[in-house]
Length: 611
Image (tube, rainbow, N blue to C red; front, side, top):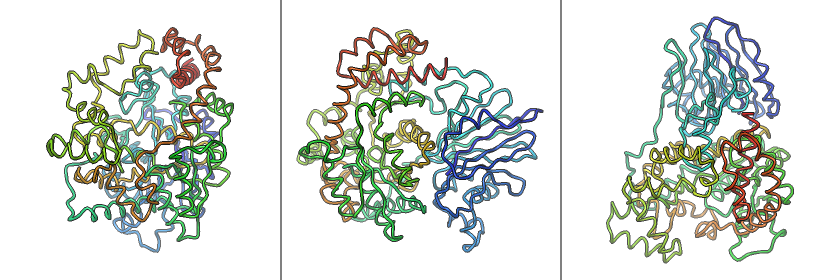
């Protein structure tokens, strides 16, 4: 995998080496660096090898075209057959070369023929034509600016902020939406001048200027019909196992996130069994504290984590963060856009590097999409499409399995049925009241104006909820944030739950297959029979008690520091522009310290970025 960047001038002027752009990449971990340039264009690649004898050449010049790619292809054999590449030659053909050959055969429709994680740019020096594409889900980022005939792109955002020919200005709507965790325009970023190429989109610069188009849409219009529940479970097991296996293609050590949840446990076991064929073992990492560092609790998630490790004979590294160390990580996060949450992951980043784990397999996103809990749509979908009797039966079975309360069930049924004009006025749940109250009232009107443009948080059918997660940017925020942090430590996060084959399979399932006998995520549980330990497979709740205990203790400790932290930023223009001082000071006496951590980090980042 790679960090790619480039500059193209479409006007009659020469391009000099983009020193500012390259200088901001000094912190990236890479193995090889290469550049290509002519009088009007400059491309650079910082290549990190996942396979030591990788044939990748970066940038690659072939047949008059230039490509620089950050790519990991999963359908190399299929592409080779379609592109008439001999099987015995394939090991010596790089992913970039396959992408370039696909472009020659299928043109701007070529991204549809690729399977994997990718962001790339293809340039024709003779015509000045440029084509860029980002993978179907958006695992690999791609940012750009297009100003006064200059196009500049990079898979990291910060270099573009530094190289922008005009001072970047804050995108108020994006900033506010991010802080309150509402949906924002998927092509926007924190700066008005810097754009994001959305997932499943391509970009072209030609005679008519810059255009973008969506080349793939998640489709739930067709329904898979199999003859039995067992056949559905077998099909799920096969497609998910394939998604995990293809992401272990490396001669470096593979790491996995491991919690007490279904997704991370399944990925860890399947990866362990695939790697065992090669005489290797994965190394698991948990955000929970080490068992010996806190008291054992009833239902302790660490018992389930250790059960998975014992079953597969693998090691798990638990997180041990002192309070002062956590505070320093939060302060350091002030130079990165986004919430300062998940600082446990920041602790592990150094461990990945020490262990030579260049791939981390994560199960994040499975609950929303692949194994799918359906908290926002399933019961309403059942009432509307299968009737009241079936709804009552489902609720009875869920209550029997202790998977829900009557109150939560009523909420899940009724909220999706509220008419839009009432819902957007009174029930638009993505807007978190505590966060909204902290904002400067002068900008609060933007929030209220955008509310009525937002999609419903509670949907009336399962397929709409799944598509919403894929298309509205909820999943991308953490994916992009982790991708950026990973580049600085030589780590690639890979997500089997977001494999295109898995997504298309899940979207094709009959809704009733996702839940079985009152069990949320019922199909996925059944599919993991013989893979997960039974205690994990049928675990009712991912209650991370030990991690929560550490988090609460940290928040109590942090409250003694928060006043000093806020004083550092309360006189900055960014704090005064976006936050209400009185509301922030009032919250200092409340138990909600994490809201204040977010205020501190947002204000610090914005002051640094837009002084």
